[in-house]
Image (cartoon, rainbow, N blue to C red; front, side):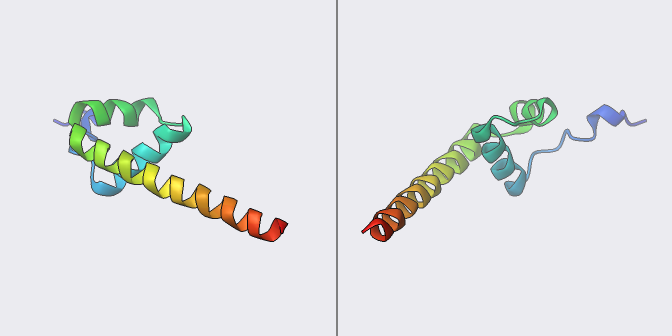
Length: 73
């Protein structure tokens, strides 16, 4: 006897954590994923993924700005 609403009760995997962090950063996180994250995810995993995302985001923005400044002369 399985409840179809309880199929997502296992811990989110690494790709799901990264996907949740990216979705949340852009404000498009679904309520089902958010509930899964709060109920079954570990806070530490999301902090690590968020810090990694922020570092990559900063490097990408910095690189784009440097390329634009070089091409502008």
